[in-house]
Length: 207
Image (cartoon, rainbow, N blue to C red):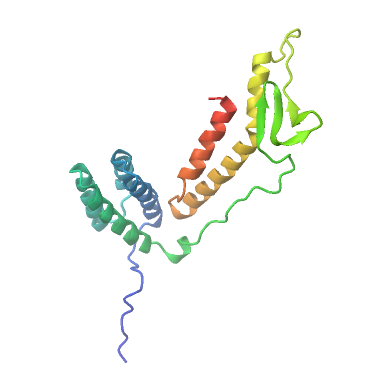
């Protein structure tokens, strides 16, 4: 009995899986950049992706994307790139498609945020104490003793402490992105944790 070919089956050509994952890891942000109207950023990702291109056929498609970008045909470039990403993803073995475990912040032992620095005092932004806002901590300062924080340094310390819950949340989100990249060669949704990290750093530095 003649076997019929399953047209829905994934292509399974011999391919360097590590190179393919790195290739995809740069194609996807390039696609996001094109979708967001940033061809310059997309171009940088595409140049890096070319170093990991695992096959001649995919390299030709990549060059087409770069040519379309160079001529300002961004919609056409995005269409070709979407096809390239889909094809490259189909080349991944099934074992590489499993999502990495998602990290979550364990039940906090500290007072849940949001914290706020007011001078040298770290307060909770919502909880109320007997006299005003709920006090988390005070940053120590003493100008009469050597090697002690000045009042200016103490206020900076307070800002850093107040940003701790936000920094923790941003770190967990970043670790999830890195875990995904390590296993699949690409990151999805990296813009949100990046924005959260920038906001937490700005809070810590009072920028």
